[in-house]
Amino acid sequence: MSKRFDEILDECVSRINSGDRLEHCLARYPAHAEELEPLLRTMVEIQTPMKFVPSLQAKSIATQRFNNAMNKLENGREIRRPIFHMLPRWSPAFSTVIAVLLVALIGYFAVIPALSPNGPGEELVLQANFRLLISDEVNDIEDFEHLYVVITSIGIQQGNGSESWQILDPIPDPDDDGIPGIDLRLLTGENALEIWSGNVTPGVYSNLFIYVSDVTGYLVGNETVAVKLPSGKLHISKPFSVNDSLVNFVFDITVHEAGNSGKYILQPQISESGPDKEFTDVSPKEQGKPEDTGKPEDAGEPEDAGNSDPGKPEDAGEPEDAGNSDPGKPEDAGNPEDAGNSDPGKPEDAGNPEDAGNSDPGKPEDAGEPEDALVIRAMANLKTPGEPLCFVFKRLV
Amino acid sequence: MDRRSRKRRDNEAQLAALYESYYDRISRYAFVRLGNQADAEELAGEVFLRALESLDSYKERGVPMQAWLFKIAHNLIVDHYRKVKNRKTVSVDTVSIKAESDPEAQAMMEFEVTRVKIALGRLTESQRKVIELRFFGGLTSEEAGQVLNKRPGAVRELQSAAIRALRNLLNEEQSLKNSAR
Image (cartoon, rainbow over all chains, first blue to last red; front, side, top):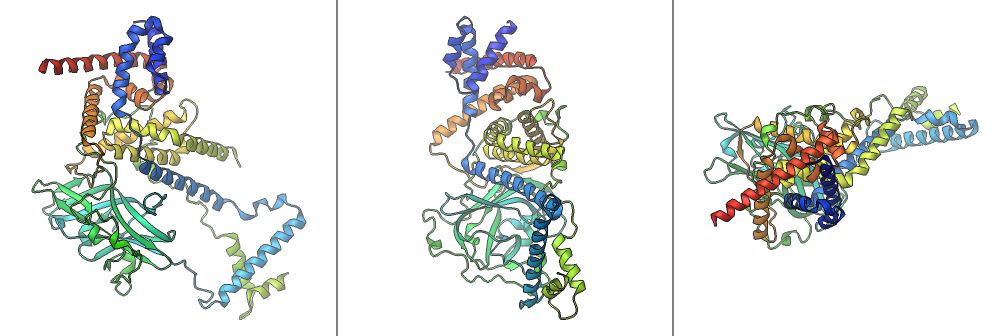
């Protein structure tokens, strides 16, 4: 076998990878066609079953997560940029006008809160319109001492499934116990734990995903078990609407033993999930407050919610996930025997979760007080009791 | 903007530009190793997030960004198996299944996938890695060489030997099947 032939074969492989036809390659090298043909047919035979197109849904979620990470970085950079660093480049007159306008604006916004019913010391907090809570319907959870579920992200989709996804980052340690994951054992019955709270775009939503990276169970008797979810996500398809008032959406997860196999299946319990479910909030931040029984006030349930998906029984036994998991797919993939072989060319642990997971590139590093807050504080120091900040400003000008 | 920030921005722009085409390629590459489409798709998304986080450690000299992405994918797959190996796995049941419209076609496809994976599993490790990067990752021999720290000529030789071995393995299997009939 000559080296030249390796190069020809390599070129043909590249051409076929780029969409060229096998026959064109053979025609290009008639002298080698006889030897090339069976090899290239083998290549096509090997490639064909593996040539899947990633699902649009998975790709759009991944794209959104990537875009969010890019935006986070960009926003972090903007926060770090000093406000006044551009002033020296401007003409003195223009700089003065801008500075006066800026101080006037700061003065104005400092006075408005002083006159507001909240008083000057109280912060104005944007009211959240959506909360997602996790609960656990009692099925086979009694077999477990602890069942930890690590939630990495949440996806909600507006409209009838055709709209884009919103990706929400869950609270890092929602139960505040310092252990990765939520212990479902503590969320049986009506107990529910908040994993996200904030503002989402008002409208009707049709799908809700929870992405789970890890499920670890400790059976009664201390046997440790890991329950893998191949699809890595739990999905509920149940329409709900969000408007200006707060919607508490309870996502119920339940664990079943498959027969007496000792295998446990984690699945969403759609009949116990939704915005209209009663719950007892056990979130750490709620512990100091009077008990929130989460009585639903018909919030968030769209008019036709009861008729949603009429052909689909809302039963725990039914698989809820619209993911792309593959039933019966062989698990011997990828030759785990070489798992220990680390690559010598490994780029500074880029793929190592232990390292890469801890960095937060979007986080501003200068946590100092912003300039406008410093100006307000300085002006507040100058004012006499009862004198509004705008008068201090007038005096100064 | 200083030179380092400008470099970082250029790298971010390059990474974003690679996203569209390389997400699919990395998904396919991961699928061959993981055997599960959902896991492969998730891993492909994770590769880009990790790349973004580690962009400061990326140095253009030596390894082009697309090859670097495959190195990250490779490391994530290794981490995945290491994690799985260290645990006692009780269940691999799925939460739910997206049924294919034609179950017969799906069964056929699964059979083909298994067949290919068995054949790939019988190659040498270097041969298999070359085939995965060239056939499923769509990398050139030069790029595959940069991922594997091999010269392009060595990659081409490994590729040629691997294809021949695969052909023999598939032929062998076919003749066994025929004689069983």
